[in-house]
Length: 114
Length: 109
Image (cartoon, rainbow over all chains, first blue to last red; front, top):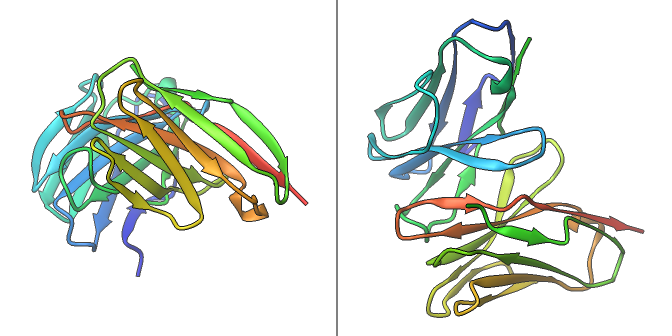
C-alpha cells in the first residue's frame, strides 16, 4: 500500500486552464503539505495543513487553492495556469506538527504548462 | 531564506567518504536530511534536534552545531545506492521546513 499517493502523476495542459492534483495519505497523520520543486530542484513549501486547518500559506499566488476535505486528503487546485507553474508538485505528510516530524513524500505530480 | 548547501555536486568512487554541509542565517530548531533519486520522491534520512537528539539512519551520520547553525552529513564507505540529490531542511518554531538547494552525489564503481 502506498503511504502518500498523488494523482495524476503527469499533467500537460495549456496556459490559462484550471487543473487539480489530489493527494491522499493512509498513515493516519494529522499534518499534510504541498511542496513545489522547480527545474533547478529547489523544494519550496507552499502550504501546510493540520487536521484540515491551514497552518502555513507561503507567498503563493491566489491562483493556488488547497482544500482538505478530511485529514487524510489534501488537494491542490490551480486556476489560470501560467508557464512558470511548470514544476513537480509533491504532497507530503507528517505525524507531528512542527519541525520535528519526518516527512513522507508522495511520488510527485509533474505539471507541464504549454 | 533557504539554507546553503555545499558542495553543489560531488563524484565519488565506491567505498570513499563524503561530507555535505548545510548552513543557515536563521535560528534553528531542527535539521532534516533527505535523499532524492532521479524521478523519485525525497526520502527521509535523519533529523537532528536542538539539544542533541537524533533520529535516523544506521549507516549515515550527521552533526548539528546549534551555535553556528550548521549541519553536516557524513557518508562513509559510499555505495552505488547512495547516488542521488541530498537536501538539508531547516525547521524553525513556525512549523516550517525550508530546504536547501541540494547536493548532487554520484557514486561510481
